[in-house]
Length: 151
Ligand code: CMP
Image 1 (tube, rainbow, N blue to C red):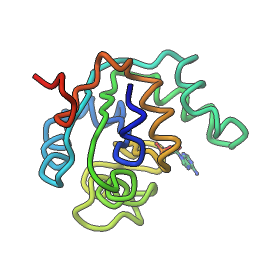
Image 2: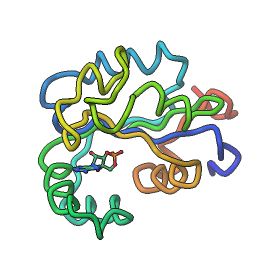
Image 3: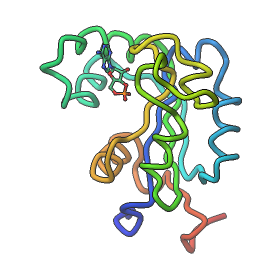
Image 4: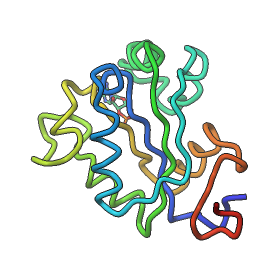
């Protein structure tokens, strides 16, 4: 199980806009260069219902329907990342949710085109990182270098 990784993991999604534009390898390269270990990764697609489940905490927001439609509009890449202070450091790396406010050099500054089509997701708390990790990855798909079973 991944309980011992609490506080050291974050869940990221390369969103349909960035996947469609072919930005996956550049984004992954920037993530690894920043010191994150990729410990699980898959290209997948969210059904409308799974997008609703994933973004449940936003269900009362005015943008919810549009967000669900966008996130289920094409392939995504979900990634589990390991690093000390993973959640906080990753949110610095990706930049502000709204690309207009994202600092130069951040992933969203480079690849996002709007508040909705903002290229990448990063968990906003350790609790959510854990929940989101379980949403995408069963423990047999997680390979931490710090585990005995690493290849
Ligand atoms: P993310 O951090 O992945 O999680 C929730 C997403 O909702 C967020 O990225 C944005 O893509 C989207 N979002 C947040 N606020 C708004 C907004 N005001 N209008 C449209 N989409 C939003």
